Length: 320
Image (cartoon, rainbow, N blue to C red; front, side, top):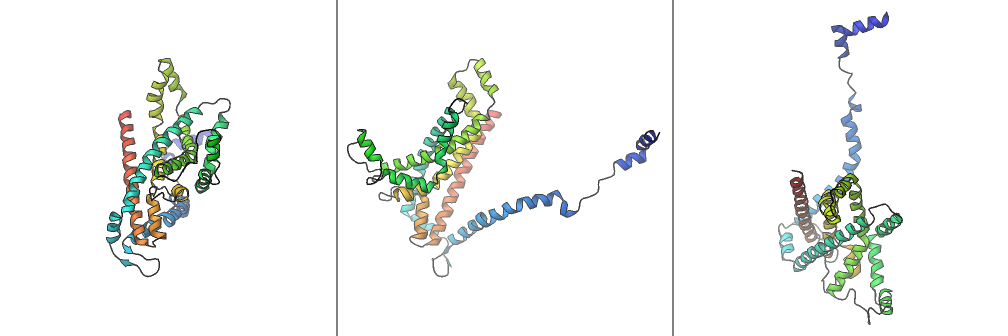
């Protein structure tokens, strides 16, 4: 009887009005928006303190003559004019772009080959994945020191080993000529970063549904056709991430050249960041170093925007 009465009351207009009444509002300190701000605030503070504030400071320094000791004085655009006329910086830009192009191609090919090699689960795959990724656990400065000792003619084991195998007759100047210095640095970077980029591409490969490959096999597609028309297009997001990291890291190269080659011989392996370091901490011209930093930042932004724009345009053409 009571159940019937409650149901009949709920069906009346007054009952339906009571059911539709708004829920009580939460206090402002328990709102979802405020909770979201609370979660995001620590990260926002870290980004502002360690990224935005230094960025603004660098731009402000680039507008002034900023000695290590003494008061800064405004001199815009003298620092940028000197950056344009700095022959060493112009040479370093060309060298850094050449190094970026070479290392990006070689590193992408090596990482893709390793990722395809360990893509399928079979006996020993876990060991190979670990072995390929293990160099990433070594710090980049430590890896540069390791290769510095490896290539040393006095203490390094590489020359004696190659002579014992009959590959060379006399010690090789691994960092004594511009080409060999660049080659030695490329070997170091490939050893250090191939496993990391392999992991990025391996994650993308494992995200491709197996049904797509099975359908291609049923249609009689060859391995090359499957790789070209299925693997590469579906791997494009991982490739975009890998290429962005590779290009950005290569343009900001410093550790490998500073430790392994010291920018030599004859400044032939002087990167853009090494020139900035030289202006700031050798010549103590902080304003000129800041102006060069702003120029490098602008180059990075332009290249990344162009790179991501090309990749997005290709994706839209394939999806449209």
